[in-house]
Length: 434
Ligand SMILES: Nc1ncnc2c1ncn2[C@@H]1O[C@H](COP(=O)(O)OP(=O)(O)O)[C@@H](O)[C@H]1O
Ligand SMILES: [Mg+2]
Image 1 (cartoon, rainbow, N blue to C red):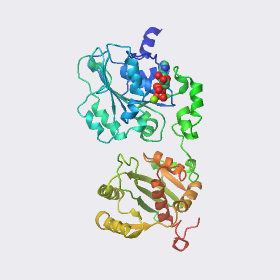
Image 2 (image 1 turned 135 degrees about the vertical axis):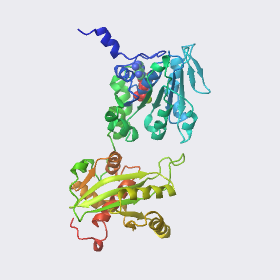
Image 3 (image 1 turned 45 degrees about the vertical axis):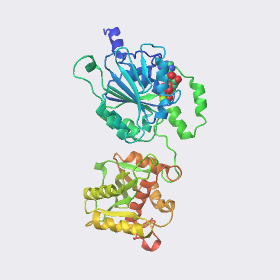
Image 4 (image 1 turned 90 degrees about the vertical axis):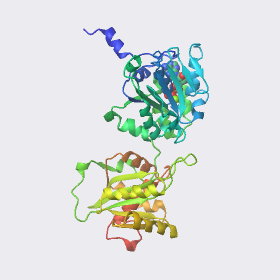
């Protein structure tokens, strides 16, 4: 007969101190998670931000415990009702908790600290270079850069002995669904990598009037509503050209033997801007590796990056060496003499010795994409599973109406057009019947 009291004790998390809200069951699950990395993600109003505060507060009775909670910008952090404001309200009744508004830090009677910070510019992380925390929380993690998120692992430390050595090191995030790195990290790769995902649902939060909240969400567009109301990570705005379901996904061992007439190309669509404060979401440089054999196009790999000029050259040069000399390289050539000069430069200095040429595109993007869309609809495009696939399918299935970027579409269409001759003016086709 198990000792139920002991079982119950085991299932209970260590409860937060100085916390006015009683954790809901899902919040308790989040608090009970001692894995290094966990995400509380999903529907808005599910109590995610509160759960982050609660988990930071779990060890505030331990001397020298140090926790920090980030949002992307200072404005996000300090907004009335946002996470830091809520925390200040929570601490207000406790005279023995000292709040320092200059460095956004609360000091507890034990000497433990909870701080707040932001990671807006790409240099902001440097402020935390010498710091040590046992808890790092990221609220609205999908707004935070993945590089900053990863950097913060290096700040998770604790001494080898003493009470603090017993405190788990924790990286905790909370956010609504969005199709970006957070989804890849937790929803796609999470289970395999030991990253815990706790789904947030509106109905689980005892502190909110779910019905009136749902009413408020009705004003949103359908995709945003599915994300915020149902916590759906896969809701995307659909474009009318490519349907996600028609893309055939295959694993490495499902690739057929390659015949002697197969042709392969790495097709590049260039961009040369790094993200910056004034331009946080510039276009991508994208290179699609496609193989065409037996009437089927195989998308084998998609490389993409947002880099400045000479780094783009390195990126493309390196990829060429990895692909090998049997793979042709083509590049979309911008109109005019500067486009020609750029292609010449690549031919001479970056890709000499490779089968390389610039391709001038004709007609509008949508017309150019049609043959590739038709091939997908007919089941004649197969994609090799890889880390690139989720983002790629998101972009393809939102094209052309609702995508922020279409560089991956352009690059894939460029590769397909080159390999099949489809989409070129009639006389240039190479004997392929649609
Ligand atoms: N366990 C709880 N008990 C009472 N109120 C809660 C609880 N969890 C969250 N709340 C309240 O519910 C509201 C929404 O929670 P919040 O953490 O902001 O949700 P989310 O970050 O998921 O959108 C807030 O007013 C919060 O204070
Ligand atoms: Mg929140």
